[in-house]
Each structure stands twice: as C-alpha cells, then as structure tokens.
Length: 331
Image 1 (cartoon, one colour):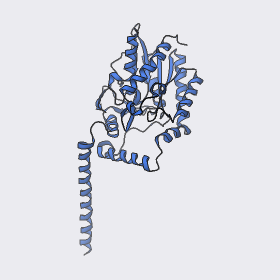
Image 2 (cartoon, helix red, strand yellow):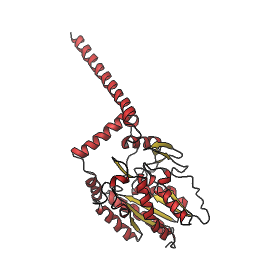
Image 3 (tube, one colour):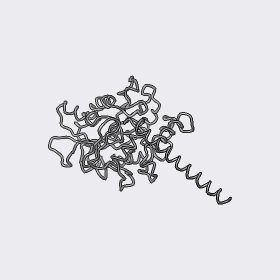
Image 4 (cartoon, helix red, strand yellow):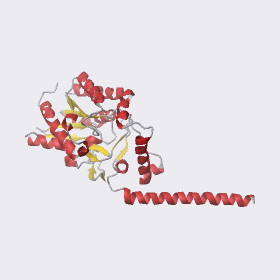
C-alpha cells in the first residue's frame, strides 16, 4: 500500500513536471511567433545583449560592444566596427585638416531604434560637411552605460583617437550603478518567453504595485551614492581634457515622456552646476523639443528613446554650439 502511494506521488510529480515543461514550451513558441515582431523593447534589448555585447575585463566598464558584431534590432541594422563602435571604420591616425569629436553616451548616442545615418553623430557630421568643414563625429555610445562607464571607456580605450573635442552626453538615469552584465540563469539567457513575462510583470508593478513611477525613480537616483560617483567621473574626464588640451562639452538629454511639463528639471540643474564648476560649456537639449507632441519623438509608444526625428532636432540644435567651440583654441 505504502509503495503504491509513493508510486502515485512520483507519477503525479512527473506528470506535473511534464505539464509545466509542455506549457512553457507552448508559451515560448507563442512569444516567438506572435509577440516577437522585432519591436518589443524587452526582447530586443535581450537580443542586443546576446548578439552585440560582451563582458568587459574592466569592472568600471562592465560590458562593451563586441568588435564587428551585427544584429537587426528595433527595426534597424546595428553593426559595430573593429573598435566596437556603432560607426564606420575610423583610423586612429588623424587626417590632416579633419577635425575629430568623440561622442560619449549610452543607448541614446548608440542610436537605439534609429538607422545609422540618422543618429545624432552622423547628422552632426553631415551638418559640419554642409558648412564646409570636415569633422569626424565618432559614435562611442553603448546601451545601458552610465557616466562612470563612459568616462572609463574613453580614458582606457578611446583616448587614443586624440579628439579635438569630447562631448559627454548625459541622460537622467546616469546616476544608476554600473550594471551586472550577463546571467547564469538558463532561462534568462535563452528564453524569449522569460524575458517577455519578466518585462510584463515589471510594467504591471509600475502601474499598480509598489514600484516607483518613472519620474520618482529617476529623481530618487540623485539621493543615492550614484550621483556623487557620476560627478567624480565627470571631474576625472574634465581633468584629462584640460591636461591634454581637449575641448569638453556637457550635453543634457531630456526624458521624453513629457517635454512640455518637464518633471526632471532638478537633474538638469544638478548637471548644469557640475558643468559650471568645471568651467565647461553646457547644452540642454530639452529646448530643442519643447512644444513637440512627445509621442512623435519616441521610437515606439512603450519606448521613449529618441527616434530619428528627435535626433534630427537635437543635431540641428547642438550643431551651432559645437561649431563655435571647435573654432576656439583649446585652453
């Protein structure tokens, strides 16, 4: 009798396990067939990490683009060059008579969901060309980077390009800590269904649960050690640029949910204060999109990364500042 009960329990557990596996398999197939349309933010970010990124040996960088990687993400081709930049091949050696600007930043600079030629770096290059000036504008942006990572990557890897100018593009979440890259979890590494379900749960918690709304979350970052660490990184970059006669410009990139009743002015003011303390020019891109319908600036409705149109507005606004600074002697 006891042996029969154990057998029944065992068979029940096996049946349950098989059922769970089958149902999860069905869910996985359904997500890949009906949800993954190439424009789901969470799934595309997962593919980005899988196809384009790798762990960095430098803990202050955390992760980086792989050299010569390629993927199709958020409806656009994403390809990296031999240096891991989303850019054409740019030789380290300078060309006589050609200026050079290095753009530091995260997915906004990388151009998430934006065709390569429409990214702000390439639009700025085009504007310089139309103005009769040859200037290489290097796109070194990497998704999920913060200021610490951007500065470390420049100083240890990209300073060799010896630019005339560095543009530090600061976004509202740059006070976040350096993220851990990669997962030892099998489902997190291999399952689109797991990515979709976790992402959906996160959205539900933000709407109805205990998770903070986007504005409260971003503002809260500036009451954590992340902001002093970001300021220290900016100071480190400013010192390097001064010592090497490189112009530095700090550019504030706004959050695009509501550009006409902006809720993150505190962050802009803090960053402006740092720029003033370092005696470097400061540009606020919010001014270029005020009056716009916010949704016209987004890659997709759930994903308010700046789209090609927003990149165009930003480039035209930023260009005169950079052109003027490039014409000044390095101090």
